[in-house]
Length: 364
Image (cartoon, rainbow, N blue to C red; front, side, top):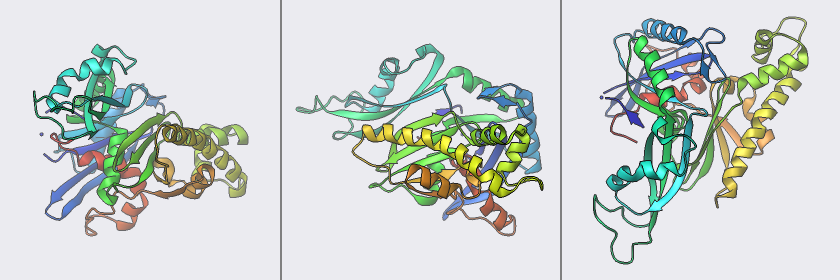
């Protein structure tokens, strides 16, 4: 999306409770995993999407890169999400990409609820009625009324600057800023491809936020960052079982003392998942009201996707087939360098980091 300056980049996924880092090498036969690592952040480092302790993030990144022997790799790609990000599909008259670039700020002002001077704007043409003209070329006779669909993206400059400063403090040189929903799509596409005749939802459930990217006919059709996630489940357990947040989080993950059984916890876990699925169903229904397509299935990833039985819980609540994403499916993973069972077990954590690690300056 927004490039700063160039080669193989470290993909850095900064979540509210932890950081994931990935480095891939592209060869003639595809990508090979060079490294992947994770580290937890101290409690309350990021609260409700707001960074409360930037130094803690910088130190965690430095320590993670050092432990994964990536300290010499300075160029990185990071992503943002949340209320400071606006993504809209808009329809504009058919014009060249260069002409659109010159007019996009004016177009964006109609759709963005922020001061246009406070945001960075980018776009991607997703479809057009006829061939896209070259620079300064006017549509031919009879083509004056033709249009094209454009994915408009705006991100508040403040959030980019904040993340950039954290990474610079960690000794890194940010090269590209992406969005979580697009990194999610790239991480999925690398392993599974994108069918030109299919509609499905990619869902990344983090601790406090859930990214949804609905893919229609091979392109992003609708996105949303939902303010719910794994913490929703933890808070439901905390409230219903009268325990502290940390104990509730342990119960969610199946770590219980002798006084609590799995059967005690399951109803509250299901209730928490149901809260997330209410938002997910609403998101899918909103998309389907404006599309001729129906979402056929859900592909899950993120830390909460590690929850035992999450696929069947989501499937039952939403009424759609559901599975987990493995971003390493089409990546060469050298068994001499990695524990393959471990890589398989943490795969849902890695989708966005992998999607970021394959970004280059000249792609969209």
